[in-house]
Image 1: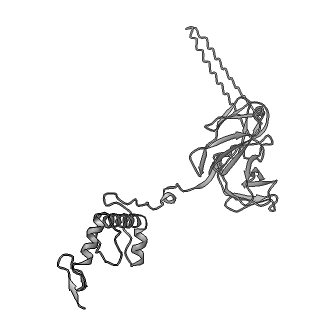
Image 2: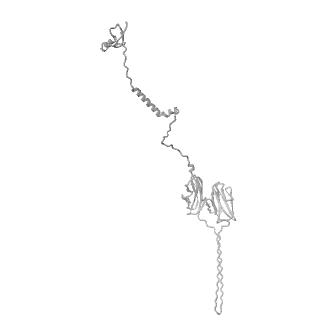
Image 3: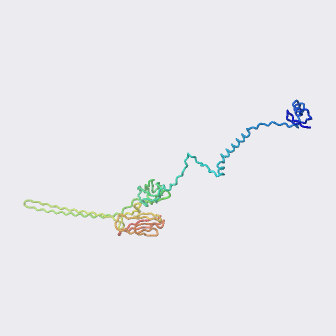
Length: 322
């Protein structure tokens, strides 16, 4: 027995068959007579592959890559040693903070001072206080007793009634004060000597001759001398005591009045006199004075008397130490 290849279907079959059994079976199957047997291998047709799937996958991959680069691109560059891009746009200038020169622009601070440390005023009188120095240009004025004194914003003090009060000026954290006493004008100590000398001499000489010659000579001499002297004994009445802030005022006792701080030094000068001034302190533990008239406060809350002597006359300064 040998095998024969069918020219129609290409299958190999035994030569014991007169015709190709495979072709006969196919014919019966298509005519609905028999079911097709499974021993024959029929080659299935291959479907044409679709390109839609791969394209869709590629699009998804590219979209995922764009999202990752958008949100984590700088981090990925850092992994590979890349330099982060400058966040400042090219067309935008970078803001440069200027150096702090406020300290250089600030004005220098000097000590706050008043032109008067003490004053004596009569009710109704006014006096202008002038402040210098301090940490600024704005001064605030305060009176300790508005019933005795009133003070304006420009430092003008008006005496209201008899008494004592302190006017304080502040500038920033600094302050200075002036002690003011309000009292009626003190009676002046004046001694007037008037000496009037009047001398009248009248001489009349009459000669009568036969020729009737009359000669009358009248001589009248009047001399009036008035001398007025004013003085206060050994006190130098015309003397004034000054500081760099101005002249000191006198208190009711006739003493010049000065207020200094503990450790503060103030230079005094005596004007209106001629000669060498000799200075002395009644209690150097409260306030001292040098040969040139520099007074220095030592013990706060107390007062003493500084004496300036010129010849046989003296000037007393009551020094209060704050």
